[in-house]
Length: 596
View 1 (cartoon, one colour):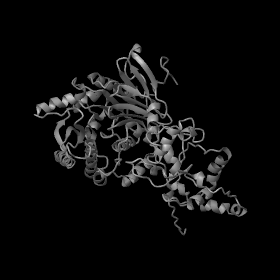
View 2 (tube, rainbow, N blue to C red; view 1 turned 30 degrees about the vertical axis):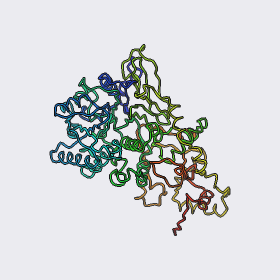
View 3 (cartoon, rainbow, N blue to C red; view 1 turned 90 degrees about the vertical axis):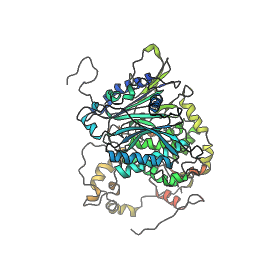
View 4 (tube, one colour; view 1 turned 45 degrees about the vertical axis):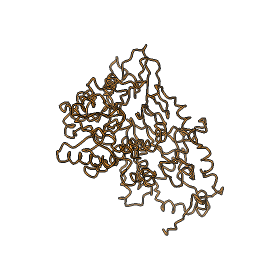
């Protein structure tokens, strides 16, 4: 094998299998066109992380999330005889629409109708100026018509907050989009809808993004932040809606627990209540996590909803991506109590992840508990904060750097542009831990398995030994299972690792009687995830689960943690018996007798 002497790596190894993410922001929240151009520079520097189609001109997706282009919209409004309200008092939607005139008109009519139902007015629509000639042939096939809609409040006395009604407008239109254009809503999609940010994205190469979207080259476009993403598509095919950033976040990584997360979010949607918003929740909100979308898009949906429940940005992020707390006995007890309490409300969205986010004047990032996706940052003397999934994304002279570093696993980094400060991770977590008396709530309500377990010992009787072969057959264990898997686990204390393909028929088609577990397959992102050893890396892994009913996610009360906490999902006979005989006013046990 030959190597170029001047390089440390093999130049033929030019494949990269992780998305590029990053942001630049002014610490004081000051807007400038420089932020836009520097954000585009970061995007171009991430080109090596991008996926491309066969035409070499169609990107897997690239985009930039910026402040709303108030000056551009103001000039446009004057040109059509309209008056644009002050910043923050209106919302801007970036909408992908069908090019077909009939479907386009149908969508516009639905937007107008739905806006009125929610006490909103569409002040005007604006065709976003684009140059389709820079697109690859594959991107052109699915290119949408891209329109911006300025939305204002026409119901000043409406008890429902303006931002909530904007959220419900989008959710109602998502339901319409799924029913009219399919699950992925490729022809009708809100890339963003916010009072503070807007997303320019698509199947465009990073270098071509400002050539495609003319707004990005307009010097009148001034922003206080720019969050970028360059996509390497792994688990879903590239499409215009799936390009990132999304409405709140951009994400480098995979959500390995996705199927469980989706099911849990869907299940809890039936117990959501809020006295002022119940009619919207029951009739208009629809599905929280849009089906058919990527793991990143659904994570964005979940965070967006949590923010609508009144939770702060740090709290929402710490709920979906908690740091490892269960076996970290050096962690402050109050913070451990906070994380345990939140675990009864929201399951973690686990997997290797660097997640950038923007909301309510704050921009930042969080790392997964293993730290499997890096995040590096620097602060400059001219009040800029730059963070990305690698160093060197912006050319900065050494003498201009005030501070630089990286995020540690499970840590959160937030720049508050309103206050002009970087929030300390410890201070953020302490404020979260002090919000409510979580420790008292847990002590009064949470029940550990050890508190109710009967300390009986079960032995392998002679009768059981004589029936061992019969039981192995009954439960579907083969001689190969015993020789290859069970013996390895017994002798070495670990599961065997193999690399050969598996040509065994799927369980439902087998002529034999397979193990029950073989009827189920784990769904996870099979890309760049290293194997995790749950024993040697127990600090960042957990088998804990709980029994009990979830409560309304809009609230935080001590009843939310009235649960039986188990160390793992497999119960011994004594544990099963203890649960069977347990009962109190909150947790009731019911036994069904089945004849098998």
